[in-house]
Length: 280
Image (cartoon, rainbow, N blue to C red; front, side):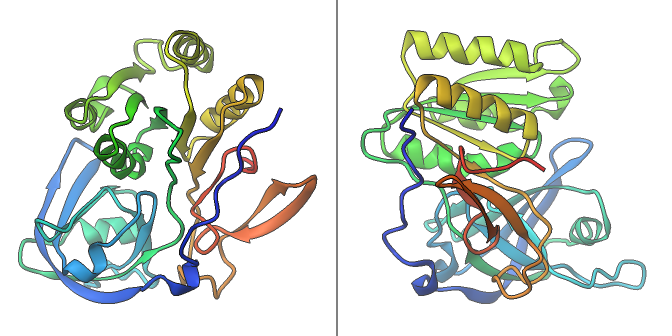
């Protein structure tokens, strides 16, 4: 099978401008019991982003919370007309706990936009997005871009329970066919997800598949891609120290041209060809 490889960016990543900017917090509010939405007042210069890129956030330090390193955060939304940069995050550790303390008017320093983002080729008309949990945050800007380009979009959104499903209304507003799957209803297993995708392929066809994070979804889409000759891309999640490729902290192995190669998720990614990715 000839799977379409990840296209080379028309602009070398070394030539893409990166900014270290202090932004004012507009909102930092709960979305549900685990996730929060952070909205920053951002200058136009840092909002020339590509879906799938990320920023490196300098978390605030207090007496009780002292995160040492910046935290990489995928972009949930970037809106040059409104001057806003959005992040959807789960409070899990010291860094995200520190982010959760930010209030309106406080400042947050962000470095970016960083990394390589998603591609939508001209002949990719029917797009499939598959993600679980906070992985939906990474795919939200891609959905907006697909809507602007007039592409047909299906979004399979998976979570533990209905109250953990996020962005469903947002995807619907963009004209997507949204398919929610949850553990507590028994619909989120790989077998059912495969049946849903196979039916979509047989009905309208799928030209490209996109995902973020989950190893089981990665393996499923790799299998479907090989069987039906459908290309795809994945945004990988990885621990990072510098975010700009210097520290080598985020190196992962990939399959490429019959060999195993090592690349930096922050620099050569975080978006990679679906068939080249190796699950952790």
